[in-house]
Length: 247
Image (cartoon, rainbow, N blue to C red; front, top):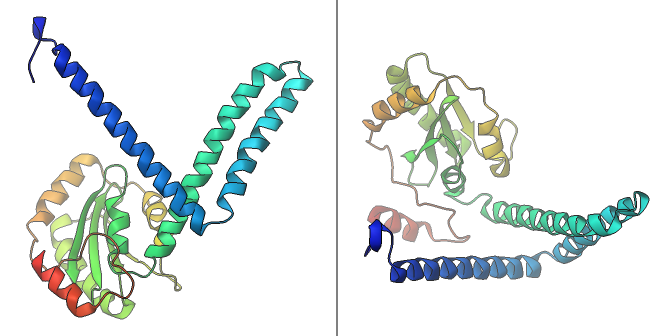
């Protein structure tokens, strides 16, 4: 980027950066509008709930303002909070819809893990079967967590193998195991992130780095790598296996 006087960006560079920010903002608005329209078509209760949140919050603040003779001061505040509440409601319903569609699809747990926020180190598909069962490894403040998706009978043996290999390298660091599903003793997909964040903190970031370095050496896989993200419903297994081999 060309510099101006004193090393500052030139006028053209500032204009280009401003144009890029505007373009990015425009694209975000378009994506948000598309997501809203898609959700609105599938979720008939969305608009009534958002309008109710906006109007209800505004009215409550206005009525409180009447009591203290501050209605015209609290009205804009109520309107802003109503808009915020409506957007929060929209986001949660979109998230719920996404999880519902991803439920039961191969790769769904991997997609959830990739979206973890914070000091998490995720390695997807450290073990897998040709039936697209998979075990993913997560290293975080709780320790090492193996997250499995697929047939419980098949993934339990995969987890046992990975735990045995890992225990030799991590010492007394806690090792957890999670099987994603809706049966007893399993963790629903929509609760996976919450479950992981509620685990106790047993190690620090320095220890996380050490463990990650040691486990990276265990790069050999017991099966094919899993695709990133949930697979489309009704996908042909043979075609998916070809796609996996190409990855």
